[in-house]
Length: 367
Image (cartoon, rainbow, N blue to C red; front, side, top):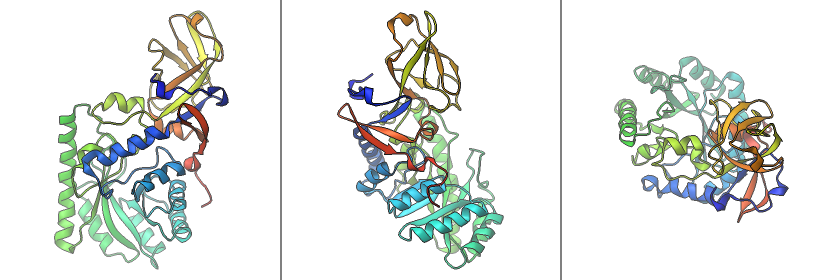
């Protein structure tokens, strides 16, 4: 493990925990701003779903970032608390969530909130609820993720329908390409270029008919560098802030560094080759196959078991370890890992200095 990650007063941190390194976070933000020469900050709309933390939002805003993307109402409330100028809730709301969006707008009038839609029924519902103060919307287009969104061929019809509704305001198009995991940079560029031109054609159709240029919001962290060089796109990476073992292995061309580690301790030594850590399902994202975490200081480790509060691992010789020993791990997927913890342990100059509350991990803050 690089010496920059070592924590001199680790005895003050109970485990399992997440340690974050503000200096590396700031470097990752600077790297994101440099990609594609986004010097004016207009092309970067970071997704806050990875970090869910007010302090990091403020770091971004101090660097001139004013537009954000989020997934939940609580994340939207966090951004309102930070006085963010422009917030896209990248989720199609139910009627109940629409009421909460209305409450967000009333609570934080300085923040311009918008959301996604992919069908006429939702468009009608939102138009009725926001008839007195129209809500900005983005059309969610399915470009291959096959999770949400309207097909590109049907998108112009939905856009045309929305132009006829008084309670919503057509603002843009979102095309999320989370299905693209190509390590090969050339192939990744070919795939993202195809998506860009497909959606660009829809934008041009709307411009020709209505004289309005819809904002284009594209991609996540893996495809960020592909879209960032296009001057008419807003990019919405999220994981870049903390990075993780999965993305580091899959996208070595990207300049980001790991800024969040899990801290775990040995709680039991089972036999000569097996020991147990306090890093269970409740402490690290567990949607991926094992190992789910990488231990840079112990490359020979093999994760063999995982349950609610325990992680069982095999090593060549457990006599090298003692109960209570600290291990530093890099999550394979940092985003769901963050949501499992209440706070982040802030590490500056190799010392634990305090905590940042993961305020938006809850489904509800106050709204």
